[in-house]
Amino acid sequence: MLAKRIIPCLDIKNGRTVKGVNFEGLRDAGDPLWLADFYCSQGADELVFLDITATIENRPTLIELVKNLSQKINIPFTVGGGISSVQNILELLKNGADKISVNTAAFKNPHLIEEAAAQFGSQCIVLAIDTKKEENGEWYVYLNGGRTSTKTKALDWALQAESLGAGEILLTSMDNDGVKNGFANDITALLSNNLNIPVIASGGAGTLEHFKDVFFKGHADAALAASVFHYNEIGLPELKNYLYKNNIPVRF
Image 1 (cartoon, rainbow, N blue to C red):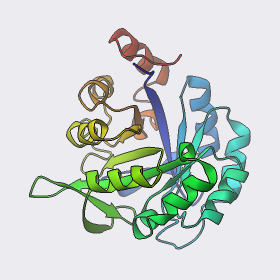
Image 2 (cartoon, rainbow, N blue to C red):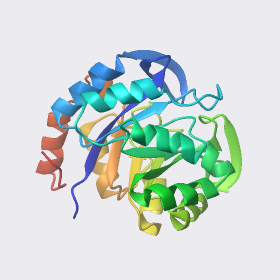
Image 3 (cartoon, helix red, strand yellow):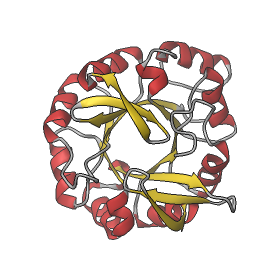
């Protein structure tokens, strides 16, 4: 089994790290540069940096912050938020990003995935899927930071994105986000078992056991979390030691 990755996520608004519950009620969580440096020193495998209001505000991702982040850390980091063209992707990669996360723009124009993968390689194109379980029991894709519903099932969109060249899926359960009751292992397992590319599970981490479950039950390749790390409820060294003792391979 390949080593499982632990990925802190920095949601950025107005240059600060923020965190909410179910995509709402955002509160300050600190300086992104300080947090990035701290997580790097604590053994994070990667970081994800999401400019969460870029799409809604119809502006490009904060290039200067990406450049500063790349100079601070020595682990891979993914950047997302407001990315709608190959030119946007090129600028971010030139300024230090290792991978690019696309969401709303890719859903509206799936060829963006195809073009980006052809130009930069699938390994740096991450498709972010925000999903919610509806009354019929199906998980559907949501756009614009979870504000806009679609009639497309998460699995169908993930399969299409894989065929277009996406190299990884960042799957966020909106129902579980910030609630700390555990990851959505059912939809995570559904995607993990049907795709040939890695799935990063996001939304719901609250305890050490939740991470164990998302790897054993959700079959995730990586687990992403924010508030449990930002507010020092779970330490990265503590988490990795726990996973190792529970027979989950991790990098130290």
